[in-house]
Image 1 (tube, one colour):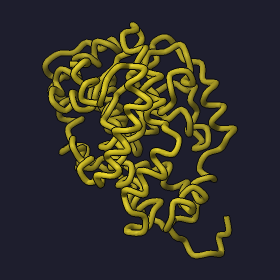
Image 2: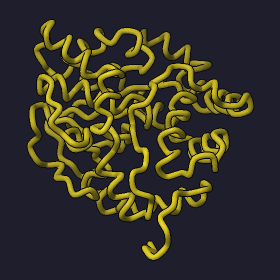
Image 3: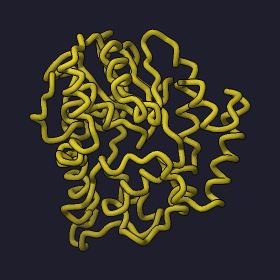
Length: 295
């Protein structure tokens, strides 16, 4: 990177792919994949922008009884694929047990031997959230239309569909808790109870109320500096020559149904890809049918 050039965000998807290359070290990625998990470890494994940060906060609140003494949730609950590159020790003891990690890896790639919480979300909603996450941090606002971002960036390798297909067969295994973002929103109390039972946390009414509060959108927005990818933002400013003070907040509106921001053409392509990739394997004609199966 030429640091003599003025700091700037990408104004095209080609630029986006180019400027983000220094963020991800192949050696760091491989070292993360080599992590030796303990049987009690918990790995939170949704596809990107599908409730990862929310679930990290639920797990961390449960295991610490409400600790907020961290600068970045990804320091308290490290991201396996990037932690080595960020200077974090994945093998270290954490603030409380069970140790917890996050990952966006498919089931066949994620380190083995732990317990896994996977969350699925409507692809259109996740894609809109990913666009908003990138705009104002890596992407200059207004330069790349949302439909172009979703079709050319989010759908270019069918990674969402591959991720879903890798985790779905494991949904009933004893070491996997399989959740849906939309159902988490409908009944947060039940979600917290299921997570607490899965990670062996004794849950009483006081801890349930505390976890509901600390994982609420209102609370997380009020403390959004803990959920704004500070570690990655600092590295991006250093290695990608991005402007300082970018908006890297991961907690935003958390809406169900934000896919309506996409054009009919993009929505049709999403539906078509679902029918090509998911329907022949899982039998569901759309996400709503799959969601009904999980209720």
